[in-house]
Length: 257
Image (cartoon, rainbow, N blue to C red; front, top):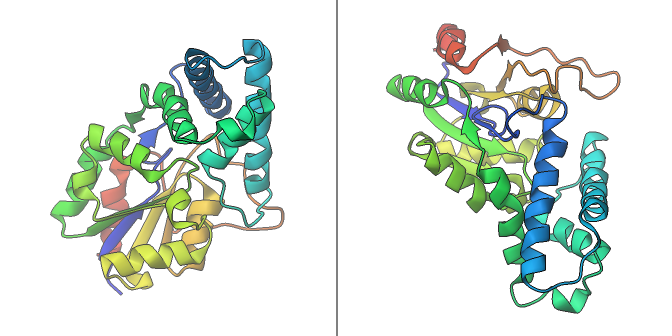
C-alpha cells in the first residue's frame, strides 16, 4: 500500500542527548553521571548526608547500568526513572521513609535538568519533519525512555518539533518497550494508519528497525556508530532503507508514496 505516515524514534534520531565532547560510545555514561551530579547537588541542598561525590557517582551508575544491561539482554522490562532513583538514593543512605512528599518527583527533575541543558536536535530534524508534513504524511513518535514523557516533550517543544508530531508515545508512560509490537500498534491507531501504510525511523537496529518490521511497518535505520554492531545473537536485521542523515529521508521514502 501507499505510505501515508512516518513514525520516529527520539533520542539519537530527532534529538541528541549526549554531552558535548562525548563520543558515541561514552555519551550514555557521561549523561548518567551528569544526572547523578544534579541529583547529588539537589539532595545536599536539602540537607541530606551523602557519600563523597566520587563514591556517590559510582554507586549511581551501578544502578543505572544494571537496569540498562537487562534491557540490552532483551529481557521484558520497562525501566522507569522514579524507581531507579529510589535505588540510587537508598544506595546513598537515604531511608525509604524520606522518599515521600514529592521527594522522588523533585529528584527526577534534578536528575534530568543537567542533561536537558545540552539537548540539541539532530541536523535537519525540523526541516525533515516539515518536508514530510508538506507531503501530507501523518507523523508520530515512539521513544524507549526511562524519563516521564513530560520532560521529553519539553525538549521537543524547545526545538520546535512538537507541532509536526500528531502522536507521541513514551515507554515510561505507556508501559511498553520497543520492540514490543503493541507500542507500534498504539501509534498506528492514534494516527489512523494501517501497518503497511507506515514507516518507522530510528538509530537502533533491534529496538527500532526490527521492532517496526515485526509490527508490520517498514523499518528505516538512521546509521549510528553507537549501535551499528548491536543486535541479539543470531538475529539478522535488514532495514528497508538506511540513512546517513535525516535530510536523506524524503528521498528514501519517495518510491513508497
